[in-house]
Length: 308
Image (cartoon, rainbow, N blue to C red; front, side):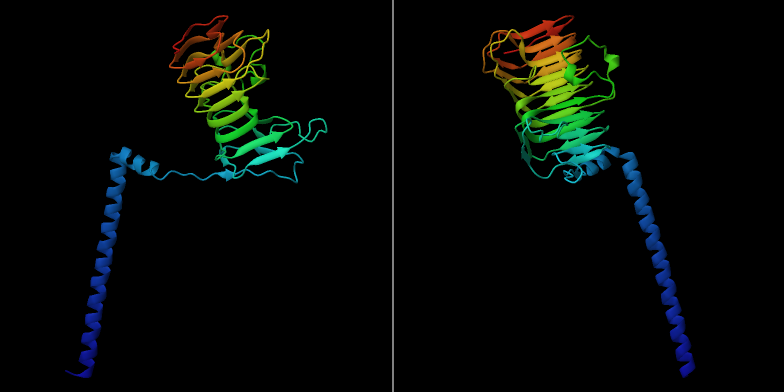
């Protein structure tokens, strides 16, 4: 065979090999596309399996809140837009109300809907004054932290103020935003309270101790609340005013269950649970200790108590 024929044969062989490779690549791409479509169809026809895969890899990221020392001379954190937030350190401060060094606002203020704040086990304390987390909006969640001498106060946009929860007339359910779901979970509050004025509030797995200054360790105003599995204690001094472990007002279809409610002070003029202007309240499996009455019903109230 001549040299030219050898070269031509080699070129023909190379062209054939390239054609085969192109065909294989084409077929491989087709197989990949078909497999991808089958996978997508699998998710379409088996949504639960795909959802399970998504849940097994949850998104846990959060935006860390920091005190802007240049913007505020007092310890202060704020949230003004929806999102998941957290703190990554303890905030312990000393101040003097007499000298005006404590500031006049809450330590953490939330003015937005759809906000979750995870304290990630950290402690907030302000010796010399009380410390507060205040929220105004829908779907606010506070969880996993410690407050020493202070409170959590949350209210939906159109609800009456949580500061006036024991004053003024009663409100009907349409005064509260029905699409609101506020939660306070896994918090320990030493000398303070949780006060919520909103529909569908959930107060769960908290440890709240109250010495004085608040109506009750847990105060809720609004329909459909759930108060469960909390440890609530208060130290009551003799007074002409009533003292409570849980105070509920303007509630409908409330559930109060699995709570431990203790009073370490005088038992006179006390009740473990107070219901005011409330309808259809179901209570079960609550452990109550050293209260004069397990239940006090005020005004138009229809409640069923299950206590032991």
